[in-house]
Each structure stands twice: as C-alpha cells, then as structure tokens.
Image (cartoon, rainbow, N blue to C red):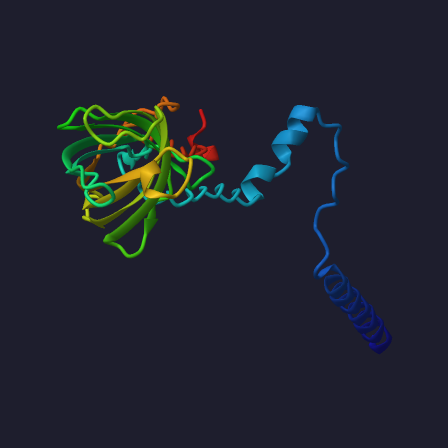
Length: 258
C-alpha cells in the first residue's frame, strides 16, 4: 500500500513538472505559425505597400524673384541748345580826314561781321563807308577780337577795298588799304559801344600825301544768325525718350499649376 502511494506521488510530481516546463517554454512564442506568403499580383503589392508620397516631405515653394530697383526718373524733356556762330552788325558815324589834311567831312559806316572764324581767331568783316562830300569805300578784311576784360573789347583789323574820293581827299588810287582798331565797351548781351580809328592808305609810302584817316563812334549789336557756311538750325528742344521700364515675370508656384 505504501509502495503504491509512493509510486503515485512520483508520477504526479513528474506530470506537474512537465506541465510547468511546457508553460514556461510556451511563454512569448507565437501561438500560430506564420503562413507562407501567397503569390500577389502587382495591384495587390501596390495596395499593400505604404504610399511613398504620403511619407515624402512636401517640396519647398519656388523662391519669388525680387525685381531689380528702377533707375531714377529722367526729366520729360531736355533742352538741347544749338549754338550757331554769332554775327555782328555795326553802324558808325564820325569824321573823315580830321587830322592829316583837315579836309573834314561827316562819314557814315556800316559793317557786318559774320559768325565764323578763320584759323580759329580771325574775324571776317565786310563794310561800306560814305561821306557827305561824296567819298565812297567798300571793303573786306579780317580782325582779331580780344576781350581785355569782361567788358573791355579790342579788335585790330586790316582790310582792302575800292575807294572813290568824290570831293574828299584823293589818294591817287582806286584800290586802297584800311588799317585800324576798335576799342569798345561790351555789354552783357555782347553788344558794344566804342570808337573806331582807321587809316586809309594807297600803300605807296607812310607820308601824309599817301594816307588819310577816319574817327568813328560805333555801336555793334549781335544778330545771333548761323554762319553762311552752316545749315545749323536755331536752338531747338529735343525731347528725350523715357527708358523702357524693366518687366518682371513671376513664375507660378507648383500648387497653382493646373
């Protein structure tokens, strides 16, 4: 009897030990075996795979270009001044032959100085003189204008002309020379008031019989005419075209594209 109880207790102990060991080994192990993967179609695979677009980060928006700064505004128009050569016209009145021979008469003179220079310095001049005793002189020559100060003007000149004496002193020749100078006060508008002293000579000698003189009060005013050899127009206004404003094209963002 005792032997049977002992054998039963041993068997019960063995069964209990096996049960505990089986429970300990089964803890953490899957209850079901993984099923072998079946053959999937491409559609099933695309549905099973997580969408890449969902996990990918959204693209950054394209930078908007910054427009370049505009240049400063220009005036609507700009006056372009065309400076023609300034011509001068002078009128004179004075005395003919007041010193050398004393055969005095009143002289009148008109002179035109065209608005051009020869060799950069020489001023051409053309004129005519008449006296109350019938003397006539037409001449052409050159002068050298010089501004001593802003208002003191000096112009020595030399000319050659045709002379008819009338009742005035006879120089013995028709072709005579005129040598003289103008000393004048020049106003702000370039007009002048001064004295002209000129000597007429036949060129034979420096003696009194071969020369006479004129002393004239002269007023000369500018004409502002273009020179004869120039076709330049008077002062004009040349409008300046506005520069085209730069245009900036802004590209649409990817989210705005259709």
